Length: 353
Image 1 (spheres, rainbow, N blue to C red):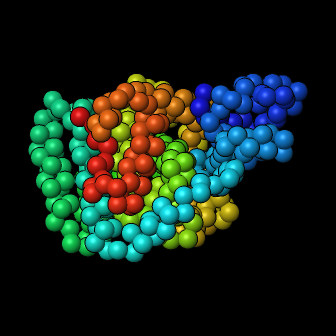
Image 2 (image 1 turned 180 degrees about the vertical axis):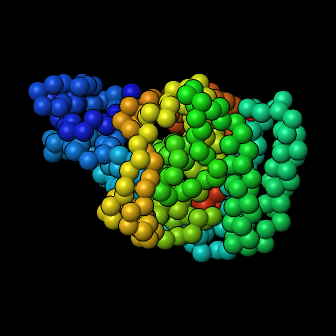
Image 3 (image 1 turned 30 degrees about the vertical axis):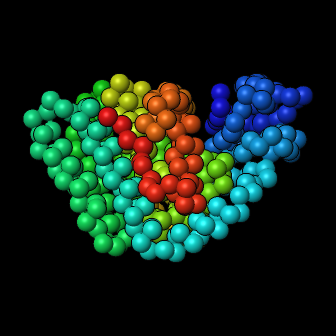
């Protein structure tokens, strides 16, 4: 169990000898040796961690991540940070170089679009609409290299995302009760339907993994190239997230919906307070905004699917080795670091076939 998730309201993580114990009142919910844990994720209000457990985890380099019940990132507690000052200095210089940033951002977007195309092909290859749609995605991937500025590239990426989610919608099987998932387009915040709730939740889990990968390699997770640098935004981690959205998060959502592991009863309609509604960009929705979120049972099921996915082995194209997707995150962050340090000439995004 590389990641220990604690989602039960009122649960507390304690330390006893060299073990972590998750308790609720007098009941023990889970018990695991600290040595087997790579990360602890506390999700939702009312979930806590004792000081003794915190010290034991940070001394061993195990970070603790706090997420809202909806899966949105709140904060992290880490031990001593990476000491690779040279890498972070070079990263800052590279981020200020428009030519370098554009070249790298093109690779990031191209990898994302190609993986989106592969996902659509896998799930809809025999559909009558698939061939034309796939040809359109091929053309979009080719257009990436024609972008002359980052803003132009972001516009192309936005067009590709809009087209992709119109196709993604066709891949969804209807709920078993005969109703509709209500998914028309990607609604970033707040999620307005169950599918958007699933996408936002799994993207948050994925971002957490890529922030960790940046920290392990020594990259500054807040200093990116494709994503605009802004206060509190982990732009570098978001850059690395892009190629993995279709591979990990979108694949988990399709599995959750189509097999199905979740149904409409697993979601809740929530009235957002100003505190709950505040976005990372510090522009909260209007008072009274409603959002759709996963309930606890649905969260636990999707977390299980997500962890199964990132634990799967895959052949990494650069090394030819079979490694878990979780380790691929680190390999891609490492490749990014080598490019920034001038040890390689190009960033090759991780793509699936």
